[in-house]
Length: 57
Image (cartoon, rainbow, N blue to C red):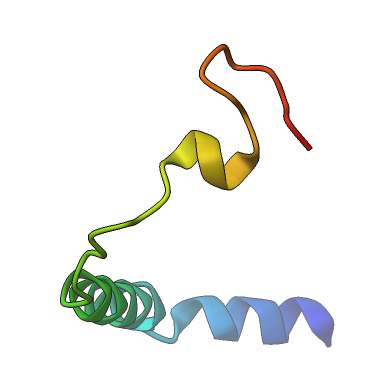
């Protein structure tokens, strides 16, 4: 039944959390290799805020 299947699944060792962590770390390392742009926008410019924090869009 369903209870038996759930119990059986809990007994099976899983590396999913570790695998997910490794995949996320690989993505982070790849992203860290992207060079920064000289004329990059600030976070406020990206979001559309001016120097006073007022939305400009």
